[in-house]
Image (cartoon, rainbow over all chains, first blue to last red; front, side, top):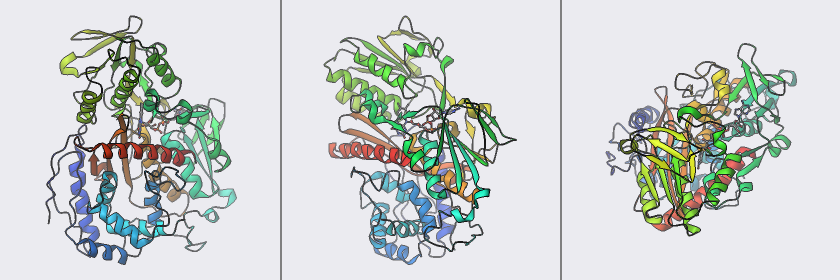
Length: 148
Length: 424
Ligand SMILES: Cc1cc2nc3c(=O)[nH]c(=O)nc-3n(C[C@H](O)[C@H](O)[C@H](O)COP(=O)(O)OP(=O)(O)OC[C@H]3O[C@@H](n4cnc5c(N)ncnc54)[C@H](O)[C@@H]3O)c2cc1C
């Protein structure tokens, strides 16, 4: 288990609940993923703003397989996606933020996990994926794969 | 099984792909009424997304004072000369014509929580089953002694976008070389934590591009520290050397008051004169939320972390700047995210739609100089009854120029996206 030591970054105005929130999210995940025993975050060190959950121990390939094996709940995906579409607008003419409607499920899951594993380097997306569990990712992938 | 809350799902229509839009579940005579007060970042988003989900099965009334909405977001870029005023001003035509939303251009004057009605300045009384309040902020003008709503016509705050923003721009454009600008920054909590400092950057940019290098911008801040401080101060030193002076309370000793006619701000330490004063006073929730009895001593409205429901009234949701949203800042991005949670719960309350655990997010982009954008943001969830951050990020001081340019381009795409998300 990585302990998630990160360089203390500049702070951003006293976000004191963050550490607590992060720990609690770990506990939530333990519960959520107890069945498959992955993405376990029992504790980690936290350095104010600019903090992300540790990269999961599980190899990326295995994580992709596990997410794809979860049946995607498209209704849950529709709610979660409503947060994504603020930036990822279907008709946006500006491609600094890509369109994601219609992306194949497999591709979507792989790309999002690459953010979670910080192999892709957009910090907004890394933070979003850092907080999303496998079930959520599966739901989103199913939802977006059916949109055109 | 999933972690989500499941309601008994009435499959009258079958579990089709369009299960989120289920007009068939509500018969015409049972149509429920949702009233939204405030057509800004929070309210317009609720209106549009609810209309999309409800597919005509819910009557949606949007009560907004203005004909058009000028975004505070990117208003600093307007001051910097990067945007024109029209490009940050949006109408409600598509919400009305394409989404079937009833827009009343009036002030909501009184909420009767027992009768569940809202009375407007045009004399209408509108009934609601659920009410959403996203009225933004009111400025507490006298939090800076000597300042007032009337004097804002001379020393603009420009913290509510519109004519105030245009006034500030015209005053900036009228400055001459050697002139000083004095900004009084607001105390916490206030809308847009990085906003005053992005504004300083944009004013400096404008002055520098006009060759007015002997101008100075003095910031008198009631706070010891501010959002993205290291990134802003590094940017000021790099691009605007000698032009920006920031003083926290341990230097100025306290802001005593302003004399707008004389153009001075008095502090414990000294009196500062400016050819232009930009006074940003303390803030509280929009008055309609306060007069409805939904606020606490802080002047903002406590809400349930999972639903954004008012802690004072379960039929009312309060979002955006007016709410106390735990660790989330008061931003357009945050208000838009909270709106999605509210739409889910409106559908859950008024139809048989399922509800899921709330997820919130925020990103605040700021421009320091052309193609040098910085960002800070986080994900949030309900943790033990409070909205707390679950992961976060901030631009790094040693980033490449390419990343800063990319960040700026992202912010432009975000603006494009959020305004479409609000107004269709
Ligand atoms: C200079 C500046 C820069 C900013 N930059 C950013 C940024 O880059 N990114 C970001 O995310 N946020 C930014 N913000 C913050 C953002 O503008 C606000 O947080 C956001 O607008 C809050 O949304 P809201 O729905 O709570 O309120 P608002 O967007 O202010 O909407 C409230 C609306 O309600 C209406 N209203 C109020 N009371 C009544 C009533 N009684 N009856 C009828 N109508 C009423 C008002 O007319 C207004 O249109 C910035 C703010 C400023 C000042």
